[in-house]
Length: 350
Image (tube, rainbow, N blue to C red):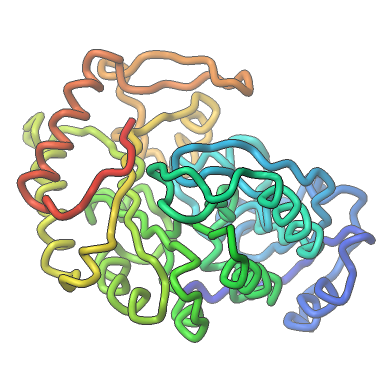
């Protein structure tokens, strides 16, 4: 886990409840400054990574929306946090904020109340679908990495307890970190952790300041033993050629990744492990920012000869792999999974 020790903490007045005060107490040497809005910070005069290392924000999430997903979960729960210590080159969260440090929302009880009211309104027993056979599932970490947030506020543990004890709901989140503090909590299979995986050499370039792929794979058995349901998240799948021009380089590297996974996961863990697969979508604003922050990553992420433009639902100018090419890429990926890890069911792929 990263050694996160912020030197400055911004807070909104309505975030300083008991939980907000407890977060402040963890960092007594940090400078504290009140702001009117958690998502409107002053000019900090720091580079991208310095902001993520040195700044923490405490806020109150006012809009408690629950959105339909149907992919990683049935629904996306209201955010518990926004932003991350990592600096992944393709991160969609960073696209929406010019300055994006970790922001913790301290009104956890409102989050829990909202989810409870929502799940009680849904049909029961829950119809079986690919998200889960028994429980309505809520993604609790779409805008942050819960593994990092868990060490910063006891609010995340409270949320874990809510889902563990709820008769109809289950939590899920994807992560690129291995926080062994989570192993002390017994979720009784009611929290699904999805370790994000990609070929190791590519991860070192684009998954900036996250835990290594090897470390993530090595943690899978331990998290299962601790009581978590453990899946993997092959996301984003990046298609690339080798330095020698080999157009099949990405296939070779994924084959090796699958063999690492096959060797690292015990049989009883394999029996419950499933995957989701999401091919890369990149963003023009992120591309321009990366040319200054992480230009080598753009050699893999911005490949116009393979990609086509798409305007997102939020008005952003995105690029994704061209439709006909992507269909072939999906077919290749599915075949590699079948050949190397046939025990790993793909829940969805796009």
